[in-house]
Amino acid sequence: MGRNLQSGERLRPVDLARGHGLSTQAVRNYEEAGILPAAGRTPHGYRTYTSLHAAALRAFLALVPGHGHQTATSIMRAVNQGAAEEAFRLIDESHVQLLDDRRTLQNVENALRDLEPTTGSEPGAGSAPAAVSGPGGTFIGPLADKLGIRPATLRKWERAGLVCPRRDPLTGYRVYDEADVRDARLAHQLRRGGYLLEQIAPLIAQVRTAGGLEPLEAALCDWHGRLSARGRAMLTGAAELEAYLSVPPCRNGA
Image (cartoon, rainbow, N blue to C red):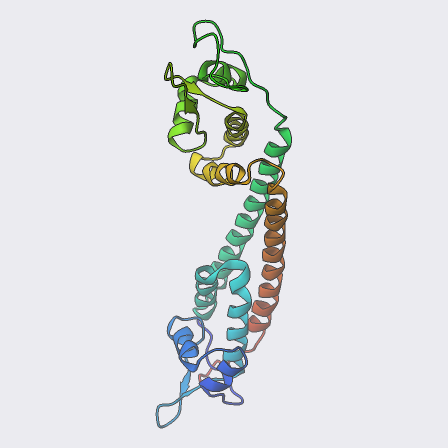
């Protein structure tokens, strides 16, 4: 069974709204979305809420920062429909996602740590001309050999925007400068970690925009901070949800 109205003090929509900086329409919308239990009605048809609704609203607003609006809505709907196990499953999925995001960050940091300063490589016999156009450049064959991948893989990465080699004006061969080699090595590390090209592309773009790996330290620190804030928000949301679940509902209706 879902959660019914609790007997006790009656609250108006404005009473629920003002404590959270919400509009009364937002409170009504939350009720219609199933985030709050159904309101009681006065003989004249006006909505009335109780401390149960107040606890539900606090729980929802506390769940949003850690789980997101959509998942928080689904959690509250499940609880209000009497499907607590479904709510717990949704919470578990959010924790799994947070753990996966932490592992992603760790793998990115490991990949960046493994990147050593690169130097240009001379092209191998038969793979390209004997000289490169510009200092510090290498061609597709030697770079592929150095990474242990096929040249076709580098061409695929180029189409995905992970590397952006220039073309030698005389031969038309791709020329990878030191930044391109760095990007290719970073992409290779992340691919070995099981990440998709579309997941890697934003990081490569950030490295490229920053002009190197060092400026990414602030971004990685911010990433750590956001994951920690999400974890703490999940704890706060869990506490408020437990408080809501602990409010004894009226089994006989309003």
